[in-house]
Amino acid sequence: MNMEAGRSFSFVFLSGESAVRAALKRITGALEDLELTREEIGSAEMVLGEVLNNVVEHAYGAHLSGPIELRGERLTGAVRFRVRDRGTEMPQQSLPRGGLPPMGNSLADLPEGGFGWHLVHSLALDLSYQRADGVNELCLTIPCQDAGGPNSDRVFS
Image 1 (spheres, rainbow, N blue to C red):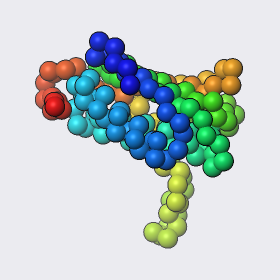
Image 2 (cartoon, rainbow, N blue to C red; image 1 turned 30 degrees about the vertical axis):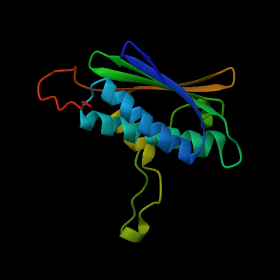
Image 3 (cartoon, one colour; image 1 turned 180 degrees about the vertical axis):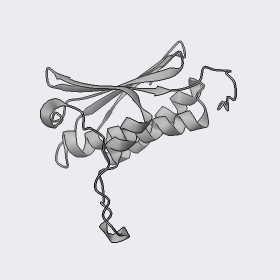
């Protein structure tokens, strides 16, 4: 992982479930270094976990593996993330809308999946997707307080 003046980080890892789990641990440490609250770190972990698992499951699929590049940059009141991969492009080369799936009338009728993009759209701002030269790029922003702001519950080592 590269830290640039404590304001950004980036790293590359191969796709796979265990690699995503390891990356999320590294992301947590990097976000602690950027002085996010526990709640802000939790929001970022949920969103990035969903995004990275989608890259593994859908962009690369069960039989392919490839690099995933993640970059985070601390801005005033936010952290901006960029996720890049060389897997299959998103359907219609656009982001899923993020609506909830049909719920049904009973617990047995609840869908198994379909909640991930709703979560991403609910917690992240400025979502954008593009594909160029065989590379998918997803950018998103997680809002956060500035270090030392009111009601800050900062994580310090």
